[in-house]
Amino acid sequence: MEQLKKEPKTKKVLDKPSIYSFTLLELEKWLKEQGEPKFRSGQIFEWLYTKRVTTFEDMTNLSKELREKLANEFLFTTLKEVVKQTSQDGTIKFLFELYDGNSIETVLMRHDYGNSICVTSQCGCRLGCTFCASTLGGLKRNLEAGEIVEQVVHVQRALDETDERVSSIVVMGIGEPFDNYDELMNFLRIVNHDKGLNIGARHITVSTSGIVPKIYEFADEGMQINFAVSLHAPNTEIRSRLMPVNRAFPLPKLMDSIRYYIKKTGRRVTFEYGLFGGVNDQIEHAVELAELIKDIKCHVNLIPVNYVPERDYVRTPREQIFAFEKELKARGINVTIRREQGHDIDAACGQLRAKERKEETR
Ligand code: SF4
Image (cartoon, rainbow, N blue to C red; front, side):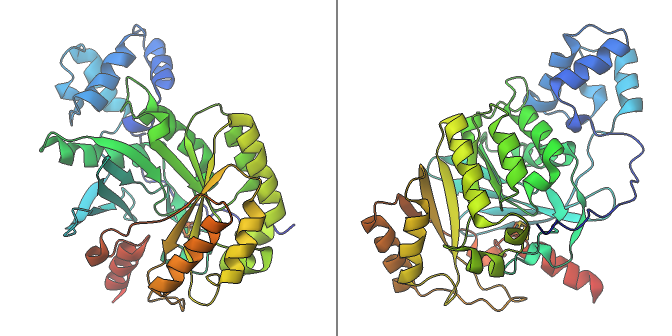
């Protein structure tokens, strides 16, 4: 089995960790080492995630000595907002600069049922999906949990101005979340904790391209997080062409891991299926897809893929999208077509970042 390429080593320039990287338990441990009572961790979480202060100095129910210790040991904000684009449909896209000069993007989407935020889990990506702009520069580095958490806190602060709330999170921005598993899990524990951002597990979705061993691990975590798999193909040949990860973790093994996940959690899985003109969008592909997933408790999300300037794929015509959906429905598959948002603001994954990078290198 072909292995994934090695993760690049990156030089760390942060001399202390971000406070947002710490779970409640980790903070308790640190406080204990300082001779402080356990309950202080709850107070710190409340300042960070409920009151959303921006300095340790603002944590006024902590002693001055503890506030100074916190400021000496931890960093507060490590993300710098450099671009904020608002679409006519209300979608807002943020481009953040990280402490080492790399950049990431975060998208806030408005739905009837609330505000959903799409976060980035890695700076770049090493998986090389052939339709994806985010992988063009390879993987620069993994994000730390705090850098993922901060994306949510930053957007929540923007929403505070209009008294709104981030009601759901999707981990579907740049990167493969399961390629940064430990930081992802800490992120999930922090945003899900009732003393943290208190976003219910059923309002959080993690999407993977199919890192099979991590799907087994995730199934065993016992969290009720929504789980999505970027399938994009009805058979292993087309999948390998679109997603090189399929050579490391072939489709039959992926389907086995998904069956295990469903058995273990009792939850259904969402299959993301991007429609690429002439590649995977014919009726015969719908028939093959229905056959592949017929015994799986699932939902299929059809994604009309935007034209990516750096890649050759073309958009599937509208009638073809509906015909594909109809065929799946006729075969008893639960399917919807994803509503597109932020058309006027480079809202497809990685496009804004790719554009900025191009401008940087001019
Ligand atoms: S689609 Fe996701 S997993 Fe694939 S290269 Fe892009 S960011 Fe990585």
